[in-house]
Length: 517
Image (cartoon, rainbow, N blue to C red; front, side, top):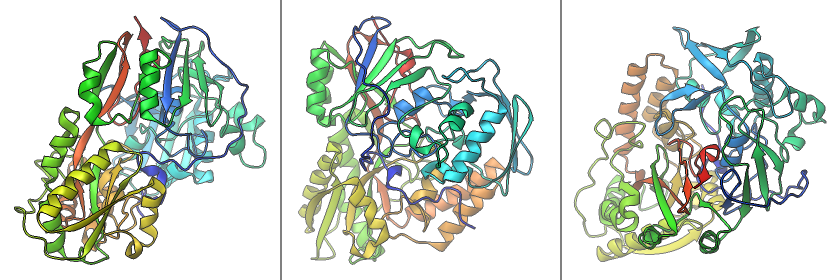
């Protein structure tokens, strides 16, 4: 049986940038005035890949728009991986793990004024299942959605999915869209075209202008059911160069840079009195070294261990990231599984290279930290006799390795993030034979079986024990080895306050809480 999380999309990686040639559907709009209650200005490095339909959106650049306009049934308590109410105020699970009941919040309206209720949840979820977009795997095991009352939803699964509640709090989790908008703009594609350029949710901001190349403008939603957003508006522009973003931040054209800062620049930025650097623990994002088990020399476990040992990854992590990350200690990110439960196996001390073959080590071309990682590793490896050539590849190119790993490079540095705060959402995509983040041909039937069993196991303690076993077996293969566990680093103007962050919502802070002094 195919696990629920199996998905073959490049957008699952940090920095996915398959640019979409969309035609803007909202009127151009500029915003005058800053200051308290004014406009918060942010920059993206790239256009949002594929548009902003929440049933299809499956990238990272753009998640701050999706999370500002739309909402899921559940969310996470800021600063934690603890599930919290959102559009659902309470929830329960049947003993067999196949039925979930949600009590819904009353008094909620969509941005078009339509009342939120259980029928809206049912229609949005069924649409997401039918469209089969990237995040639809989270609902793949749903067999029936019932609405016993206007504010109660009961979701039945064909088989247990241990991460189902986590999926309903994920930044990619199923969002609820106005049923009026779905009807009025249905067209021949269930409103897919309209929602790629427009939005109609229940979040604290409503989208008022959208252009793929920017600006993207959101205004405070006056009818929001919770505390009203502090900024009147958020304006997002596309500025590909982080250097240019920093110039705009210092000149006052931007208030906030949410990601992409070179860790080598942090000391200078921290010393600038006009700026502030905020670091937030991140539950899921980590740079990893992957070795191609389908090609020489790394079809050999001994060669993989030697390469990892000679790379001296812990030393690399400390030199490159300083205090903005911690060296990787566990097979699974530590926020999802304690490193004491799944410690990284020791590859042993550095040794002379067991091969004279040339090794191509690629790194993601838009991430400066990975370039620094690669350069430091190259120095360490060459000191032990390895012949290592470095190459910068795009995210799309790296995710193309999965289709033909025998044609892929011998080694790759990339940044991965699972979709929710559960160990299975790391182990499954990275180590399962069919995992969407398994880029270089790893396959172990025992690991596959353990991951699938855990996904169907209702008892959380039993599921965790199975996943610990899977993590240890996978880690012993020295296929995918973390370099570090990164923090979300935000650089902002010194007068910006109100930062709140969810560890699994990467590359963003909650815009609704921000304000200028």
